[in-house]
Length: 291
Image (cartoon, rainbow, N blue to C red; front, side):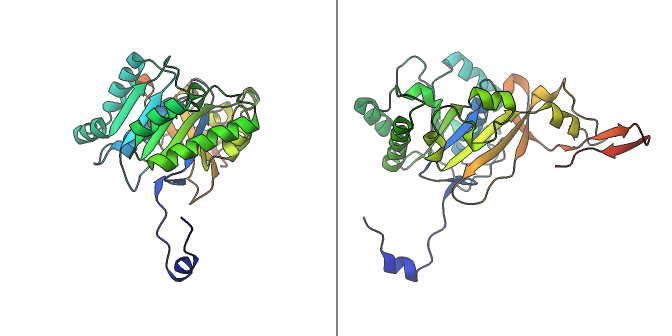
C-alpha cells in the first residue's frame, strides 16, 4: 500500500519502535565477532532480555521499551551446551524473569539439521514457526544457507530473504557472523568492514554490533578496582569484553560498554575506570587513560 503523503505532511508521525537502542523493529541486524569471543552469550542474554516481560531479566542492561516472543535458532552448539548456558545465565535472573523467559523464548539447536532459508519449504516452516515473534536470532548466519559468502550478489539475496522473514513475521532478525581474519589479527573487529565475506552482508543490514576482547593496551589503561585503580593487566584481560556498534541507520548510537566474563562465560556489565600507574620520572601516580 502506498504511503498517504498528505497524511504524512499534516500529522505527527508515530514514534519509532526499537528492539534496543538503534535496532529498529522489523529490520535486519548483525552481530559480528571473532570465534569464541562471546557473541553467542551476548545474543542469548539479549534474547532473554527481550523475552522477559517483568523486571529482573535484563542482564545486559539493554533497557528495551517493549518485550515479546523470541525465537533463537542455534546452529553451532548442541543442546547440552545450550542447557549449561541457560543454567548459568539463570543464576543472574529473578524467579519471575525466569518464568517469563521460559514462556516467551523458544531456543532450539538446529546443529546438523541442514536448515536452508533459501529453500522455499524451509522458508515456509520458518515463517510458520516465527509468526508474531518480536525477535528472531540466527546463530550463526553461515549455518542457515548454502550460498557463496564472498559473492555480493548472493549475499544481497540472502539479506533480502532475511528482510522478507522480518516483513512476513513482524519480527526483527538478528544474525550472528564472524569477522574476517585480517580484522581479527589487526584488532579492527569494531570496524564496519570487519565482517567476513561480501560487503553486502553489512551494507544491506540496518544495524551492526560487535563484541571484541580487551586489547593489551586497554588492559593497561583501564581498571575494575575503584579503590586503587590498578590496571587490569595482560593476565586478566581475557575476562573483559567490549560491546559497541559499527553501523546504525536509525536512532541514536549506543555507547560502547564493557562486560566481565563470569562463570561459564556469562557476560555481566561492569564500569571500568581510568587506571593509575606510577610515573617513574616524577615519582607520582598519574592517570594514563585518555579515552
